[in-house]
Structures are given as C-alpha cells and as structure tokens.
Length: 323
Length: 189
Image 1 (tube, rainbow over the protein chains, first blue to last red):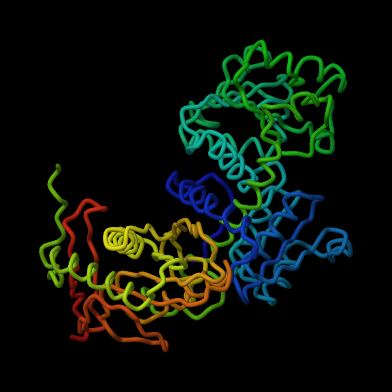
Image 2: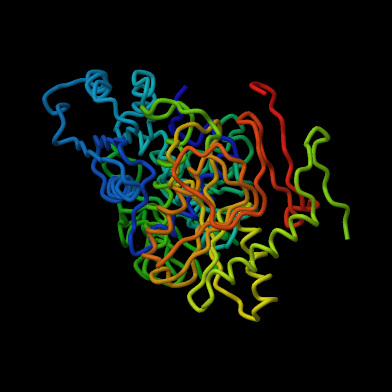
C-alpha cells in the first residue's frame, strides 16, 4: 500500500490536522540561513504538469529541493503527449524510472487516480485534476487561515464566490473546510453556482447556495474569491465580464457593507476588476501573500508526510523503532 | 493537585522520582565542573523527553550558579535515517534554537541513549544552524546496544537492557509521577 494524496475526499480530519501541524513547523526551515533539510536525500520527485501553472509547480519544486530530493519537471510542451503519447503510456514510462513521488496536474479529472493505480511504488500527489480536486490548494488555504486566526479554522463562515461549478479549488476547499467544522456558502450566478450544490447528496448539509452577493457575504469571516475560468467556459455562462463584475465582483465597498471583518483569499492568478477588485487584493484584509508563503510550507509537509509512511519510496524497510 | 496518571501495571520501574532528581543534580554539577566558564554554555533538548530533562538541568544550573543559560529544542524527524517506516502520518515538532549556535558550547540532552541514531540526527540538525565550538551529550539513561560510534559525556544511570525491551520516561510535565520504566516486549529474552 502506498500513501497518495489524490483528494480531500476520503481524508480523515486527523490527517488534515497532522498536515497542518507539520506545515507550521516547515515554516521554520524556510526561515533558516541554510534552507534545506536532508529528509528526502536520494529520493526522486517528478512534477508532471500537463496544464500551465506557475505557483503550484514552483512551490512543489522548491519544496522538493528544500527537502533535498532530486526534482524533475515535465511540462506539457516538453512531454511526449505533444507527440501523441497517451496518459497510460506516460505512466508506464515514468514507472520505469521509479520516482518516489509523482506530482500530477492534468486537465482530465481522475488522471492522478489512474496513474496511482499503475504506479506501484510511487506516491501520487494530485496538483489539480480537471474540475475535480486540488487538495494541496485547499490545505494551504486552511494553513493560511490557521496562521491568520492562530488556530485550525473551525466554526467560521466561509463564502466561496464565483465560478464554483468549474473550480477544483472550490471542491477541495468545500470538503476540507466543512470537514474542519466550518460553514460554507457558495455564492454566484445560477449558471456557475447551481442550486443543486446545496443538495444533501452533493456536500451533505454543510453548504448553502446564494445567488445574491450581498446575502452570501453577510457576516462572513472569510471570503474566498475564485478565478473566472474563461478557458473552461465553452458555453455562455455569463452575459459579459462587465456584467459579471458588476454583480459578483468582490470590492472593498461591498465588503464594508456586508462583511466588514472578513479576510480575503484568492487562489490566483487573479483577474483584477472581474472577480476581485485591486483595492481588496492589495488591501489590509487580503491574505494572498500569506497564501503563497503557506503554499511552500504545505507542499513540504505533504512530501515529507507521504514519504514517511511505511512502504513509501524505494528504500528497503528497516526495522521500525530503531531510532 | 490532581492525581498523577497511571502507567500500565506490567511496566517495571527502573528509576524513581528521587533517583531522577538526584541524577539531574549530579549531572548539573558535573557539567558545571567540566565547563568552568559557562558564558557560552547552551542546553539543547531533543524532543520530547530531552526537552523536559534539558529544562530541568537548566533550572538546576540556575539554582547553583544563579545564571539562566540559553535553552533550545530540536526535533529530529527531518534528519532521521529511516524515513518511510511510519504506519501513520508522523507529526513533526518545532525546532527552536534561540541563541547563536556558532561558537557556543552545547550540552545536548536526551532521555534514553540506545542505538545512537537519534544523536547522529540531532548533531546534523544542530550543524545546520551554525558551528558550535563543542557539543557534549547528557543522557538520563544509557541502555547500551550502540550502533554508531557515539558515547555520552554525562550519564544519569547505566542500565543493562535486552534489545527487545523498551525504556520509557514519564514525567510530571506529562501528568505522571517522574519515573523511568522498563517495558518487556517478549521475544529474545
């Protein structure tokens, strides 16, 4: 059995707590003069990114390097996928190189799960699959809130605003935040936030759907703005960007009226003036910079924690408890 | 004052509260005698047993000398040589060395010295923070069975054990009465 991180779905609340606690201590490594620990020395981490990404790929790469792993990046343009190789063939090729950890981003939902089935000695980490999940983003968002509030976020009201339907960030965050005991509100137009999301069979009774921005934001502790994913919108979900911004754009003015105490998250990259205004993004309540810092710590924690599980990696299993 | 928590009945007491307290006093005196000048002395406890004992040595030295020497803690999880054997997600604890490591004279403190691998990892961790002038090792219990060329400079008690045994420290900071226990696990006794 290999440990994977394929999604928040199926994770236990204890596991999330452990990852958050470990990530808090990982900050300390990044504050040292020598920002490197030997934990994953001799281990190989492959970053397979079949979709564009700056911060996720960079932070997984840096996380691997700070843990002394050998990190290889494969991007879409550099991969044989361009030459027509199927995902399964890519998996078989990668398996023969026996990486210890494979970090995957793919446009197809479920791609990391497929790879996990074919790679017997590799920990697979989902770095975003289609419109399914993006677990490391949700965990780093929880870490950001933990650092801001000084404790693991629980009992908070979190409004997730925007393109929930296409958002893997939203899905993972809904699962993680509700598992930690927070109330989640989904806010946006019916085309992007279908009322069905509030159906108990979707996310249990943990979420509510709001089509009015003011109603959704009212008294929220945390506002999470989602990127309007124009590349995934093949049909007409909104009349125009201007009209969307007018009704659902999160501005300082709207926040002052409805959620004056709220802090704001954005997974990036931001469409300024569409889903978030610059006065919010660069303002006092923005935790965007803290999110980027937390991203590195959380990804270090994910790599270390997965590698520590028995059977992970290629090392011969030594006698437990020797230390 | 609440009642101390109980340990399992089959645990055999090796060191009682009184003995532990005497060991800490004696080791503190030995450290002071050996060091002479304590201006660059610092105590570093290894999580979690060594943290408690290191703190007590620091307090004892303060009682004797009137000086509170710097105290730090290290967690060796990131420096282990056997990563990949855990059954569950391991918890990584804080490392905090709030003093200038380079040039300091460090007394590294742990509760039980066994294979020496923890100490090897702890030394690597310290070196990442700077270049101490000296590092010396103080342990409450030396149970033998070393696998690396490491020896303690200050020992509370040498206790012969079997490899299949476990040695456990329980202290008031964790809600127990101070004691060190020998736990038989059966096997090659």
